[in-house]
Image (cartoon, rainbow, N blue to C red; front, side, top):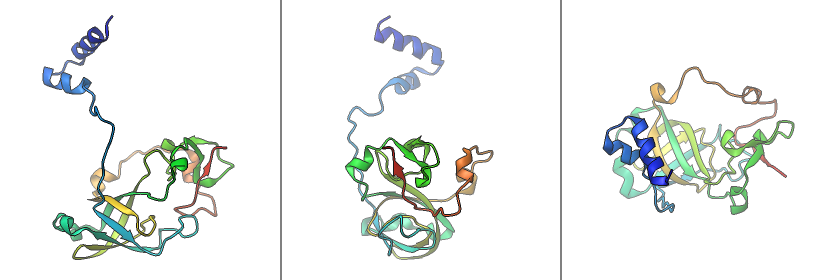
Amino acid sequence: MTKQAARQSLQNQLNLPQSLKDATLTPVMKNPNITLEPIGVIKNKVEQPAKESGETATSQIIIKDEFGQALSGIEEFSHIIVTYWMHQISTHQRSTMKVHPRGRSELPLFGVFATRSPMRPNPLGITTVKLIERQGNTLKVSSLDALDNTPVIDIKPYLPRYDSPSQVKTPNWVADRGANHKRGQDYRREK
């Protein structure tokens, strides 16, 4: 069976309108290059994630002027989700595929996509934080586990209905945080 015939067979099995069949099987990206422009920057006193936990740090998210209007109404939410680029993750760290969760060598190695390790191919950080206040283009937040001068990619409001799924399943090591664990703790790479 040719590639085209296999594609047609799969399209027919999907039982979708032709427009959706075409969209479903057409590659989303022909050019894998993605350009992200930061909308702002994080300012705080956190310089090393392994030494200071972001849980108790207060941070300011300073949004660029051209995106200021996009903050309209954000102050009505108690929590927001911040997406940021972990700019200090090296090319070498980005090639890491397995880590010991939370840097605990007694735990087995897991793929980075099964952990919250900052070492990953695309070092995006996503954290839900408490929004303390908004002053113009500046958001004052707590519990942001990002370093000073980290570029901010996006902000969304936290919506419990959508952001708190029920009946969640996690491995045992997630519940067993260990006595010495702190949020933001460094991870150990596979040797």
